[in-house]
Image 1 (spheres, helix red, strand yellow):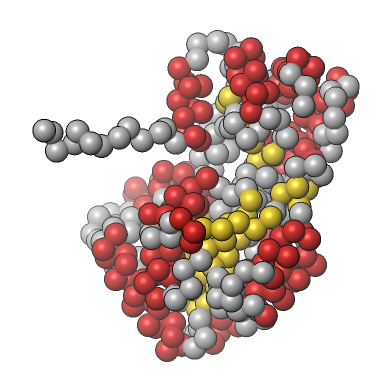
Image 2 (tube, one colour; image 1 turned 90 degrees about the vertical axis):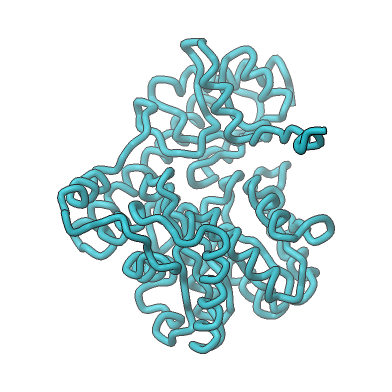
Length: 408
């Protein structure tokens, strides 16, 4: 018998499979609304001009080489990235209670956090928002949090298409003391629904009182609103309260460095000695998982964040990207209203960030794909960057006719 005879075929990844199907479609009207990446008004990937500038300078710098980075990563990248998420004058940075290591983007950071907690945290219960990014559950299951270890807190209300804050806080209050809570710092994926600052303060009250362990997955800082500080409020507020936490910071979206896998894991501890011990263990995990992290994307980010002129150019790019997303929200909402599409579509402009949870049901999504060649996730999530001035009329008309043909 073959060694591999009993290996079952794994199902395709839901998100990447949307793009695979889109690429195989030959219809000229096809639109990819599933891809989790920024697109220009022409529907093309965008390499940020500031990134191009830094890459050109790196290519011309003959002092650079391809030697291994330290296990914890590129020091200047880890330092400036920590300041970006925690704030330059963060009490955790000033006191030395924060520590960080470079990771394979946000996904790698979440995986390392899960590995660390499984090894050192006695409470083997992790809560996710309902719904959450599809990979969260898989990451924690792979790290040892399977079955009853995974639980949910209410988050998105289907009827109002908004935050179920009462349900969320009730579920957090009832979580076992010490439970792990996975939170989205901003631009919640997939819903685009975020708590406001007053709600975040109440969430922090519960985290602190119940001694819960927050993990902030930060994939969109600065990309959500165009304001780096506003997007970091939940993390920084919790740190100001003395709450110990983890942060998973990705630079895929806000730098457009999707395939460079540049990210950090930040841990805010109770003392400098604890921070040193935590970092030592994170380095051991890194060594076992990937040996040491890659250089190219990290060096680009570090160069930009440590240069005032380049930093400002990057901030301007963030405003361009977040601004285009807002324009597409307004355009789609206006078209749906003008068409008289049944239902309320105010959530399209009320939600934030790259994704919109349209409220479309699986049968409607299937109809949209079969009849109009629109590709989106089965739960109705669309990437607003997939909309352009050239296709928004077509997309709005397709949604309108689909809702008429396949009512809610």
